[in-house]
Image (cartoon, rainbow, N blue to C red; front, top):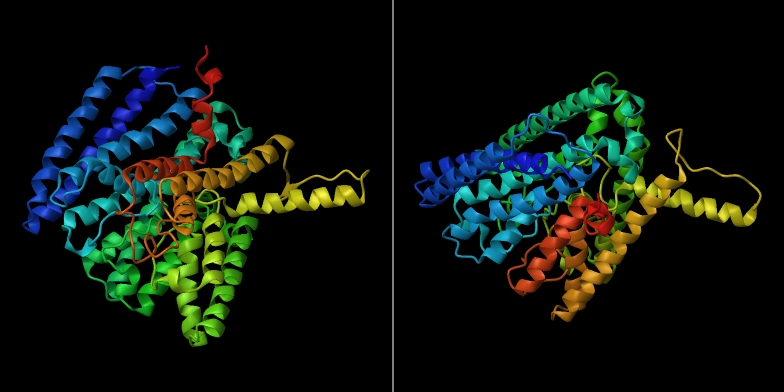
Length: 480
């Protein structure tokens, strides 16, 4: 294990996070809020800490292999969440470090769950810091997936790359170029979203914050009532388009530069859009028939909130915890779906669900025709058994983790709906739960501290999609 290289890169990430604290410092300074000094002093200390780590572990031959990649993937999220929590803990909102860590973890993992009771009373520096954390987390998960290309056979992501058959040197160069292209596309999407939101009636500050959390599919808002505060259909439409755009594979966007049809021809994209349409109509019909909502209005309400739940963004325009048992059950299922592989979303992902469906059909066909040789294919590529098993393993881990975490939360005193929806929303990095306490108009502040630490761990595990964490706890990983 090359610990020097791992710590060197962590030092780079820490120093970058320290630099980013300049932004909330300036916002609080110009709005005459005392929190500017907290962000400034914390930012300087963290930057110097990062520089110290860089200088201490700098190596001419910084090499990152498979083992280092797994370790770095886990440690970077833990370290960044722990450090990002410091200005929240030291600020005037008077929260414990447990709450600060929960808030920062929810931000950096783009989950969107919050412990802040009255968001509109906190300083602009804290609001922009929450948005920055989600924006950086969104970039982080995409670039981490691209940078870990040699390991992506674990989740089947190699099917979305054509470069895996090339020599290592050329592969590394192409992966680096792809990562840069994706960061540029991600930034352009954010800028376009901010401009359109501002034109549609949001203040400049609100449009900046919401554009960052929309493209990151994070869901942190500057208002207690989330997007429902604005009651503006154009704002809702822009955010819907932003959530959908961020839920599609950014790799496809990079490829579409030379072939615009690549986005619309992708099997995963088609499956995702079909899922959205069906899900929206299911909830819209329920709202219309059972809650007597005008059908056009029910489409509007359903479209925004369903897309927000499926993409794991977590915005809301209505308190969907009051929609009745059927709607809550469907929204719970929607939480698990997620967007496309290679996007900023969490959840199981459409690609894996499509593969699972093919596995089910394959097993049925084997019963009917036991001697027939059947192979699972995806976009004309044959899925080997190793990839299929890894996909099924992740789906199994996803479901069993929710059950275990929900059981622990229930044991800690939470009611069954709160426990299961908190577990699901953390593992799937969605944000709000489905009960009144942690629903779209509630928050996680009243949960016991041990529950907050458990859910913080669940958010990191869900963001890393289990396997990286499981590999690290295996004794064989640490043997020479």
